[in-house]
Image (cartoon, rainbow, N blue to C red; front, side):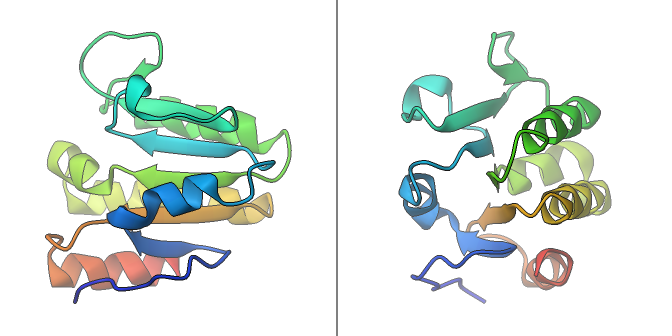
Length: 141
């Protein structure tokens, strides 16, 4: 089930990873929390707070096993007003943790964003298993 959505809407959404830059450029006055595998030098923008998921020690990095740290960082930023929370590493987290723990994590991030009246996006690739994609859609949307 390929994702062909071109118009990025507000509210919880699953989007094709190819549209990540559209989400990042949208509403430039709004802070974006980006949880990603992309290194910091690949992401530009004054309104983007990046959480880089990697096992390599770095000042902007969080080890992928430390989901509680990511949750805390997101929660702290949500306290400062409406933001866009973008999870751009769901497949990587599934590799690291398995499908069920990752879906629980996604569900918690979604609920935190909704509670604080913020937008939540999850980017996925066409390679994601159809069954997992259906479950993910049920959780996010």
